[in-house]
Amino acid sequence: MQQVVAILSALAAAGLLPAAMAAPAPQMGVAVPSGTSAGSPGASGSLTGPESLLGPVAEPVNSVDSSIVTNFDEVAGQKESEDLGLYLDFTKAKNPQPIRGSKGGTDPGPRNYRYDAINSDLFAPPGTDSGDVHNAKWPMGLSHNRGGLRGAGWARQQNVAVLPDAKAMAGVDMRLSPGAYREIHWHKANEWSLILNGSARVQGTDENGKTFIDDLNAGDVWFFPAGIPHSIQALEEGVEFLLVFDDGNFSEENTFLASELFLRNPREVLAKNFQTDVSAFNNLSPGQLWIFNGTPAPKNISEQNVTGPAGSLVNEQSYSYHFSEQKPYTVPGGSVKIIDPTTFPIASMFSAALVTIQPGAMREMHWHLTSDEWSFFLAGSARITVFQAPESSRTFDFQAGDVAYIPVPESHYIENVGDDDVIVLEVLQAPKFTDMSVGQWLGLTPAQVVKDTLHLPDQTIANLPKFKQFIVPGSTNITQTNFTGT
Image (cartoon, rainbow, N blue to C red; front, top):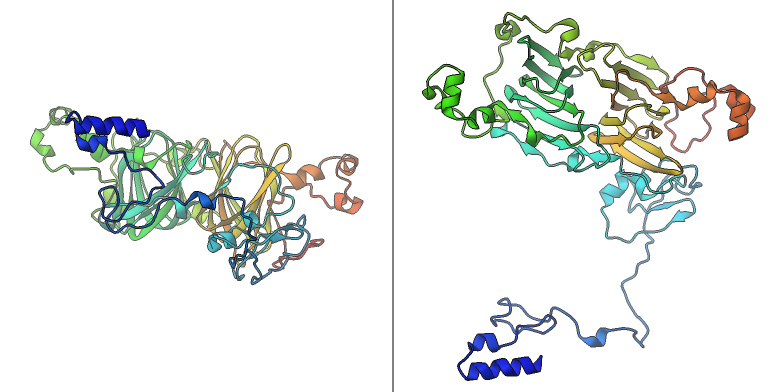
C-alpha cells in the first residue's frame, strides 16, 4: 500500500496526476478530526476501537451491569408442572418472566412487555409444545392501514405477505364513514363478507343483467362471485365489515375499480362505447376513488332498485343472507351459528361458523377434513394449540382483531382464557361446514381400542360423547384441573 501511495505522490508532483487522486482514502477505524472533509462537522472519536481491546483479558471482569432479575411477579399456575399447560395471565403482572414449572428462566431485556403479556403461551410455552410449527397468528392491528379520501374510511388486510401459510384465504377489515362508498369494483377472487357493526347498502349486477340490492345490518353476510361488479355504501350510522377472499395472495391494491377503468381507456373509445360525446368525460376523477364520501343513500331502498329485462337476483340467487336473524344453536358453554351453501347457495365454497365461547369454556378439539381454517376473533381472549404431524405443536394467544390460520388437517381447539365471551368466526373453503370432533371420534371407537392405545381409565372412556359437542364447558378458575361433571 505504501509503495502505491509513493508512486501516486510522485506522479502528482510531476504534474501528471491531480493531487486529490494521490491522497489515500480515509480508512475505517482511523479517527477523523472534526471538521475535515472526510468527517461530519462536529463529529469526534473513532468509529472502531483499538487492538488492545482484543481478548482474552488477564484482569478479572468487574462489571456493575448485572443480568440478574429479582423483582417480578409470579402468576397463578406458573409454578405448576409445565405439562399441565395452565394458562398464565401476565396482563396484570409486574415484569412477567418466561418461567413455567421447571422450564425457562428470567429475561432482563430488552423486551416488549406488552407483547410478552398478551402472548404468554409463546413467552412461557406449555411443556407439551414441541418442535417447529408454522406461525398461525396475525393481528390486524399490525397491518398497514390505508385511508380513504377525506375521512371516508380505511382498510387493512392480511394475506400471505404477513401470514405465509395462509395460501387459501386472505382477509380485509374495512370501515366506511356514514354515506361513504367502497366504489363500484370487481375482483379476481370470490368475496364473502360479515358486517361487524353499522349497516350498509350493497348492490351488484350479474353477467346476465340481473340486478341485486339490499340493506344489511351487523351480523349479516354478503357474497359476490369473482368478476361480479358491486358497490357498498354505508348508511347513516356508518359500517365496518370483514371481507374474506378465496386466494391467499389477494390484495386490496389489485382491485378492479370503475374510476380506473374509465381513466385507463382512450376518451374516444369511451365516447364510442357509450354513444356520446367525449366532453361527457371531462369531469372524471383524476385518480382512483377507492373509498370516498358520497350522497347519502335514500332511506327508501326502492328508489335505487334498478331492474332490467332480466329481472332481479332473488331467493337462491341472492347475494345476501340475513345471518343476524338466525337463531344460534345453544350448548353448555356457548353457542354456534353455521352458514354454508346449504342455506346460502350462491357462496358455493364458503362455509362458516360464528362461535360464542363463554368464559372458561372451549371450542372442542377438532380438525377439518378438506379445508384450511381462516378465523377472525371479534371479541374476547383465547388460545389455540395447533398439532402438526408427526410430533410438533405450538400454542398461540388471540385477542379481538386477530386472524388465526390453521392448515388442513391440523388439530386445534379454542379455549376462552378471559373474563368475557369469545366470539370467533371460522371460515372454510368447503360446500358444507364440517369438522372431526376428537371427543365424538373416540366415543364412537370400540372402548378396547381406545384403552389399548391411550390407557385411559374405564370411566373416562365410558363418558366419551357419541355426539358432536362443538363447545365444552369449563371453569373461570384458570388453575382448575378436574372437570368431571362440568
